[in-house]
Amino acid sequence: MNREAFLARVREAATSGLRYRVHADPTVTRAMGYSTIEEDLVARFTAEVAKVGGRPVVVPSMEAARREAAQIFRIYEPRSALCWRHPVLDRFGLTDWLRTERVTQIDSALLAPQARAEQRRDMLAADIGITSCTFALAETGSLVMAHEFGNERVASLVPPVYLAIVSREQILADLFDAFDRLGERLAKRDWPSNVTLITGPSKTGDIESKLVVGVHGPGKWHVLVVDETAGEKPAPA
Image (tube, rainbow, N blue to C red):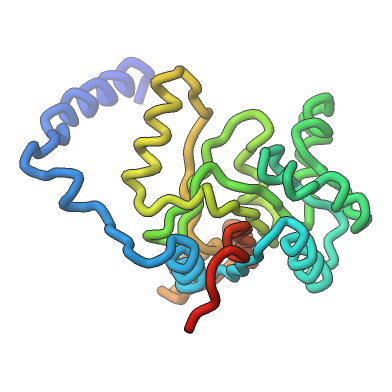
């Protein structure tokens, strides 16, 4: 098939596809699909993370988060970490903490001046990915990730082990809430390069319908939730 014939077929297919446009149904309202969560958002989020194969831990402070992260590091003994740059990670003190753990931090500051081949080498060699998130969803235990410089997708996709550090304030009830917040960013022309949702470790059932974990991304998925209000709550009766 020559080039003109190929392009003609593409145009024909594109025109044909216009007949099947999706139209919004005005009778379907947001309230019909909104997940009303009456329980504590942290409790629901961590419960959902566990259901999808993640390993959630709730801690009351950043200091406790560093202790918990150290326990995770004792298991996997990473030598390098592919990281986001994010205000929550700054509060965690990630750079100084990784230095005390003698783990090389790989992030946009290190990668930006490197040649493409060097970037690829360092990212693929990372033992663990560490990020925060843009939002976390209590409804499904998902992480909403708006990607931009400093918050690259590779940190949550490439290393075999993944650690997300999430602050309580980042947890929303429903996906609708995340769309609202993202809409506020878009209205200010603050556009991420893309947005992804991550729900649990990488898994596939493509091969003989058998669930296999960790094929296309991290197989170990840890979520540290820092709930600094936890110490203020009365103990359960």
